[in-house]
Amino acid sequence: MAANSRLTIATHVLTWLALAQRDGREVLTSDQVAASVNTNPVIIRRSLGDLRRAGLVEVRRGAGAGWSLARAPEEISLLEVHDAVDAEPPFGLHHTEPNLECPVGRGIRPALSEVYGRAERAMRRELADTSIADVLRETLVN
Amino acid sequence: MAANSRLTIATHVLTWLALAQRDGREVLTSDQVAASVNTNPVIIRRSLGDLRRAGLVEVRRGAGAGWSLARAPEEISLLEVHDAVDAEPPFGLHHTEPNLECPVGRGIRPALSEVYGRAERAMRRELADTSIADVLRETLVN
DNA sequence: GTTGGTTGTAACAGAAGATGTTGCAACGAG
DNA sequence: CTCGTTGCAACATCTTCTGTTACAACCAAC
Image 1 (cartoon, rainbow over the protein chains, first blue to last red):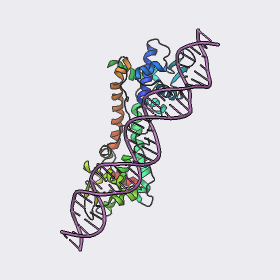
Image 2 (tube, rainbow over the protein chains, first blue to last red; image 1 turned 135 degrees about the horizontal axis):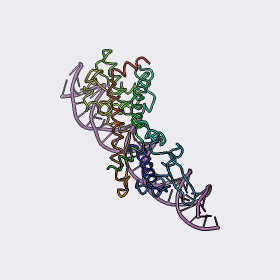
Image 3 (cartoon, rainbow over the protein chains, first blue to last red; image 1 turned 60 degrees about the vertical axis):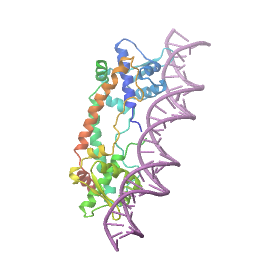
Image 4 (cartoon, protein in one colour; image 1 turned 90 degrees about the vertical axis):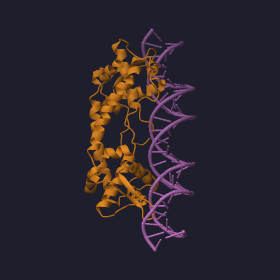
């Protein structure tokens, strides 16, 4: 499959909301966000729905509706975004159960789970150390 | 799609070869390996083909053929296995190019590449610290 | 040199998941 | 009430992975 871009889309959306907030614009519609990400507004609404359920953004419905950040951009880490969009773990175990009559088949899943857990925790630590405010700052430099 | 299990399959295969080697069996056929992983021999041959191209296993063809490790199990890290099977990076950037007229659309890709790079390097460090011998030891404990 | 077991690989089917699109009900500020 | 916007279902398309069948290439053993 193509790599998972949901974290990228969600971070892009939040960064855009953070910039709008800083510039005094209160809310953005999914159409406006979609224009920056260059995709369909429904894709954006799906992503924003995930972020709303995680408490990272707020929505106002009806006429003049739109989205805004629920917290300061310094207080939103990429790890929260990652978990909000339910991104895939990088490694998967066997699709079909290995042969349990074989000593390797019997013991390899817990052994691999341990290794994969260490690798994923290391990755999550890095994501936890980066906030939307960090991404916005880096983005405006480029 | 389901998470990528290629690293799991390849590690299972190598662990099984390491155990066979330790027990004095010189080579294993793809049928024998497939019986432990509980899948089709062609899947195993595809995985072993990747590992052979990376120099991690050796093959003997013809009658009485089969596979063996090219190095001691202590000298094969999961990072090498990961790269040998060309596993997907955990994060992907946008499928379609963002709107370059927007300051966020313009700068977000390099900003995210940096963050993603840090996270992937942390993950790779953990994989580099684990060898097939480590996995075999952990496997036999369970 | 023939035989027979094994690898290497192409071709294809099916399942799963992501993205993108359309359509429409629900909502609520003005 | 109106109208712009969200929420969401349904569907099409594309891609990738797993699994399967089939067969040529290979080579040790005899």
